[in-house]
Image (cartoon, rainbow, N blue to C red; front, side, top):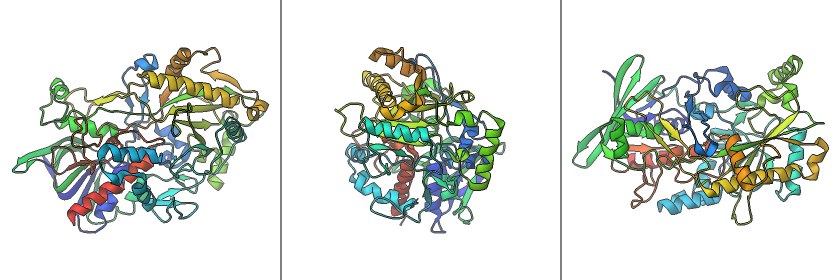
Length: 541
């Protein structure tokens, strides 16, 4: 076995959180930091061109190629489950949407953990710290930070009409979704810089990569965490990992941090013998520490994709279905970094309530000037748009579990979508609301015709079943190593993200969220990593 050396900190996973931590923990120039990444460098050209997510998702160079188990709520279907496999992690292949969620999300975290530092008024300055917002600094936004936020560089007539229609059914227009209550409809802000994707690797890792006290190793997949018993209890002392056709080990003097994401982090814990004892026994893994919550509490946003054929407006379907159109699109991006190649997967967003009983918006729309049968298929050969809607606060809970004791094998992912009556009702209600928006006067000049799910689905049960046929992940898995109070037997980490019962080990990524945020989850993960760095540095000082 090769020795990679001894470090103050070992960070496992160079995704969004890992890049932030590597920067912050190495900033003093003294603390020796090792950052391990199972994937490769983020030097694939399609990572950086915004529309390139089409070529990064389901590509073994950039994606882990996970799939869910067969889902009863999706009428037996399984889904591709993209997770980034390069520096920057999923921020290198995601939709680039800058979204924090709602004030209520963080106030609930504070209540569930008993730690007031997770309240909205406490995390807002943390969001602002790393932000570089196009409008400059104000009470809600920061400027000069690493995480660039810009307006999109294009608009679409059909999306503008959808926004007008939303206003006509009571969803007001908004220019900013990130002030604590994201109700309204408008174009999403995006993590781009002049029409080029701005991922966590560019933002946080590149500025730190030249530091002599930061070691970055790619192509290194973890075998197990190293644990040692001592007078003060069990401690994580480092990690064993595969890299360059060798088995390595590295030691951590202070802390080891799992930043492998909501799928990778619980899988690594379980392969190391930390997790639900009964499942570990069944998987052939020696139980080192019985921690029932590891891999449980999986939450995700299921997007239900309604598609409508239209006439009288330009959509990407027609632009991209001819060689001349493709040439124009390419030339516009080459000359101005704008146009369809600068598109985030979704351009227009809306947040609203499925019914009057909701205190804050519980639905999010992602609206796109295109349509296709399913991801990976060609665009339809006629003008159309898609209005995807997701339940922001699902009550369904799933799990992530290793399939056996092979650390290189993919874990089993079971989201359990639409497994509760509440989620099925909201799915049906959201489809009904989509129809109401499309039926509003502002849309009628385009003569919209519903293709998916189809006008034949009318009753609540029919619509819920139709949602199972057309629903797909919007790539927001969280919660599988949730934080919680000391008396919460299902909590994996405490409010400072320290693993229960194991000294010197933290989890810092979206898996620690006790409940999913009301919106896209990438930027909340940056905030979590910023707070974790502050926790760790306060211990070291």
